[in-house]
Length: 230
Ligand SMILES: O=C[C@H](O)[C@H](O)[C@H](O)COP(=O)(O)O
Image (cartoon, rainbow, N blue to C red):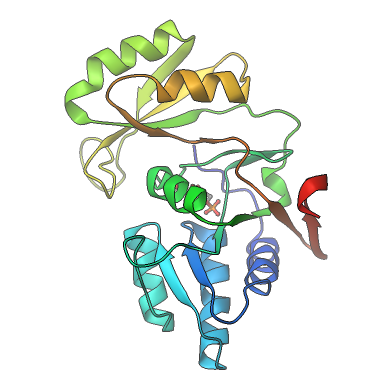
């Protein structure tokens, strides 16, 4: 579920600090959401000033914004991202819940393909333990068996409803999304369980992918990195 509590200023600080880490010649995975949008805008300004990069968008939204701010685009068929910059709905250590905007499938394979993932989040996203709900994108025909399998895994799936349209959210990939509530989340085994359900396209648990988290606050930005990434 999308968390909307963070201040725009804190999101901006996080996004701009991560964009500042991108260097000339890099291919950049362009994440989705309000925080990643600040990074995309900052990269657009850097391109105007001569930075030579190409972007791999993770959604319709990030592609449109990248085009608007003048970032040359490419695809995973043409290039491997050096770095991906993306937001998160929850951050516990370096584990994430993503998919508040239903973009987590593309976000995950772009981040996984990239050499490093820089997460950008305002401090309202920080938590001691991931609580969910966990977004799960699935093939529309598989709705009933996927729901049964999620219940067997201890979750309670709710079909994500669209706003300003009757019916469900349809992802950029033409699929549907369950938001799945769990009593408690043990990220690694739950990620493996959800990935193994036939009909599931991708879930929003990002485990072991983040190389740094840029935490934006009202008065600054903090960079957190696991010891091996320092
Ligand atoms: O599907 C959307 C993405 O995973 C977003 O990166 C996530 O929801 C965070 O978005 P925001 O920065 O707007 O809170």
